[in-house]
Length: 86
Image (cartoon, rainbow, N blue to C red; front, side, top):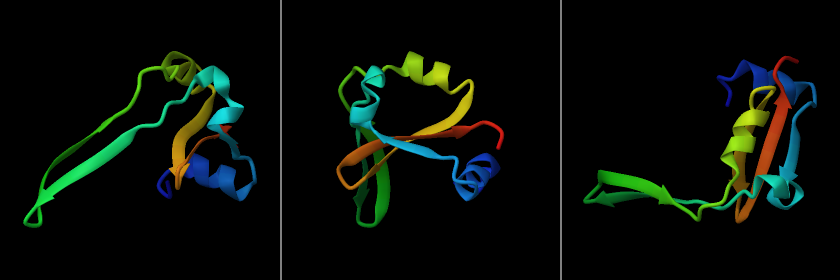
């Protein structure tokens, strides 16, 4: 995130909007589980899985006019977005 000048400028100027997934039901954001596997300290691989349903077409359409990201804190998922140019 620190390498993304746009999001850093938006953070500094207070222009990042954060919403819980419940506040954007039209995106139907579904949680994903990701994992990494190790054996004897060696990384074997990883992956992620989750239910179908997130409206990625709408997410990508919205992303044409703004910066945005999904994230989570603890067990709570959120959507953050900011103007493309601050």
